[in-house]
Length: 149
Picture 1 (cartoon, helix red, strand yellow):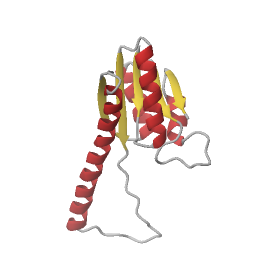
Picture 2 (tube, helix red, strand yellow):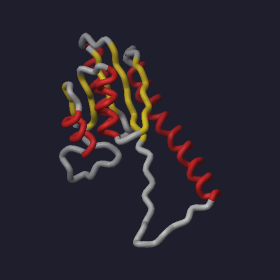
Picture 3 (cartoon, one colour):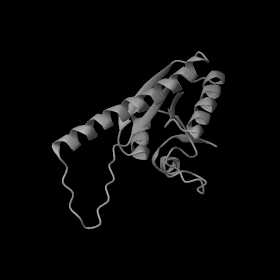
C-alpha cells in the first residue's frame, strides 16, 4: 500500500503526520510520501488604481519568495524527522500550485491508495469543520482519504 501524507506545518498537519506514522508502522505500507504544496500568490490592494512595480521591488519580491520556499522546504524536513523517529523511510515531495489540485494530481502520480491530511491547516478558518483544502482534496482524489482532527 502507498500512502501520501500532506503537510503545511500547521498543528493539524502534525497530527496527521503522527497518525500516518502510526498507521505506516502497524500496517503493510510499502511506500510513504510526504507532500508540501507551496502556493505562490501575491495579493495587492487594487481599488481601481494602477500600481507600478520597480525593478528593485521586483527583485526584493523574488528574494522574499526564495526565502519563503526555503522555509516551506524545512516543513518537509521536519515531517521527515517525525517519520524517521519511527524508522519509517519517506519520499519528500515539494510542489508549487493550488494545494488541493496539486495534492490530487500528486496522489495520482504516486499511485497513492491513501491520502492523510489534517482537517485544517494554516489557512483554515476556525469556524469551519473542514478546511477548504482538506474538503477539496476529498472531492478531487480518487483514493481513500483520512482526515485527522
